[in-house]
Length: 116
Length: 115
Figure 1: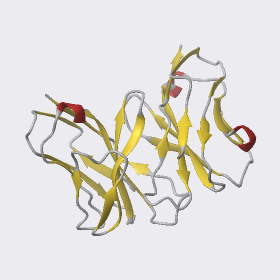
Figure 2: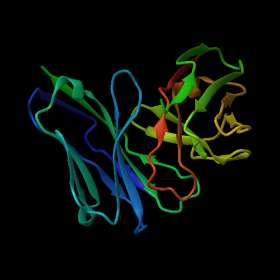
Figure 3: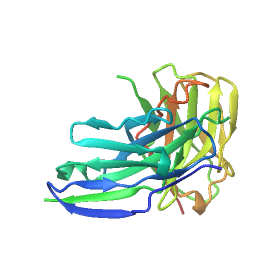
Figure 4: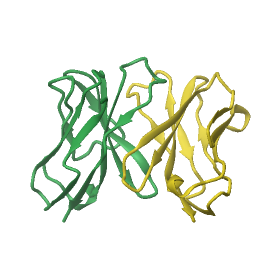
C-alpha cells in the first residue's frame, strides 16, 4: 500500500525567511507520480507541481523549488524569501501507475504561517 | 475558463435529511472523483468515475452515493447524513484512465455540517 507522510503539521516563519516543507512517501511501485497542492485560507486546492518517478531533476519556479530524491523517498518543497501570501496548507500527494481508481494518496498537510 | 464547479459552498443540515452536492466540469474530462478532507487525515477518496455510467468506490464510500449520467456532471448524494459526515468535500476531474501524470483539478469545496 502507498502512504504519504508530512511530518510537519504546522510551520511558522517570518516574512523573507526560507522554508522547506518535507514530504516522504512509501510505495512498492517503480513508476509513480508525485504532486504538490496549495490550499489557501479561501479553501480551494491549487495544483503546484507534478513529478514522475523516472525524472529526478529538481525544479525551480520563481521562489518555489522542489527536491525529489528517490533514494530517500522524499519530495521536499522549498519556498525562498517567503511572503505572507504563501500562508496556506500544503499537501503532498502520490499516485501509483495503473491504480484502478486513478486515486491520489494525500499526506496530512503542512500548515504554513508566514508572519509579516 | 476551465473549471470544476461545486454547489453549494456551505451546507448545514440535520441528521437523516437527504442532500445532494452538485459537481460540474467544463474540460471534457473523462475522470471525476469526490474527496473529503478532515483535519490531520488529508484528503480521502469517496467515489470515482472513469466515464459516463462507470462509477466505483474509493477509500471511504460508506454513506455516499454517486451517479454519472452525463460526462460533465458527477453529483454526490447523502441519503441519510450523519454527524460523522461533517467535512469539507471536494469534487475533482482529470484526463481519463492511463493519464496518471495528469493533475486533478479541484472544485472550490463544499463545507457540510450535519447536526
